[in-house]
Image (cartoon, rainbow, N blue to C red; front, side, top):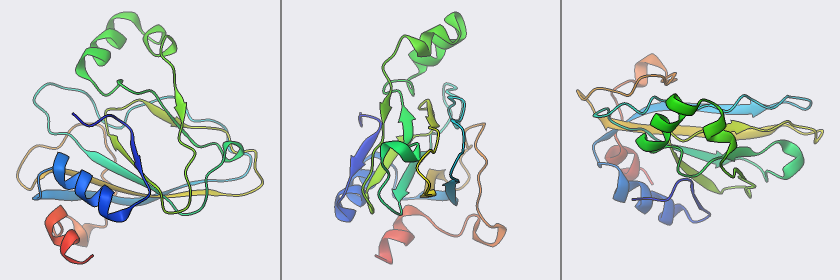
Length: 173
């Protein structure tokens, strides 16, 4: 199983990593950006999709469009929180389950890619830098016709829905 999050600076490496852990017929289900303005507060910790048994999963790539340093409020992640066992613990214990875990900042260099299972708990930190923090976000889900996990915004322009798979996008690189 891929350790989440997985961070890589080499385009060939992250393409190969995605291809190893997601079906080549995985459909593109999200293409958007995250922009954290100067003075933005920290987001509440959250996961993007629910950890329901049997649901397909999404693999999300956060691409740093510029260096992301501590003062810019990098994404904070809690490894292992994408697992069903953690989500069950969270349901039983509440927020204490997350507070008991060690979170990590994703300080990224321009061009770095962080791959996250969409069930992983994370949040954007406060931006005190005087500069915007910008990430390109691309998510891949189960092949067309398969159920998508609950909870995601699935931010993809209507004319692109169902048009691209990991295989077709890989062919363009």
